[in-house]
Length: 141
Image (cartoon, rainbow, N blue to C red):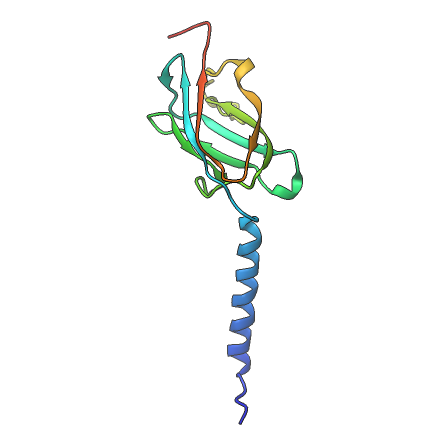
């Protein structure tokens, strides 16, 4: 004897499967760990914003992270730092001053030297579990 599923139950099953499919797409095929520290002249850089912009649009992104008081960070998709990053080639940007300041906001001095703000970075299969970005600047504080 065949048992039929009621329309409300069927609708719930379809919605649950659709949501599962959407969340699976957002995770990418294998997210790798990208974490480490940012130092400037040997000192931790708290509050640095890191952004990985993929060279290949199919990787999704951008992927972001922010350093804590010890300069440590973990990267993932926006809103989910630490969730990982798909393997691939990226442009890494590191800044301490927000780029989209409001006109009435007080100006924040950028601590990261211009020549150290942007670099190419490859995330291999297996990830980068300890990416130590040891930056230097002529003017030390």
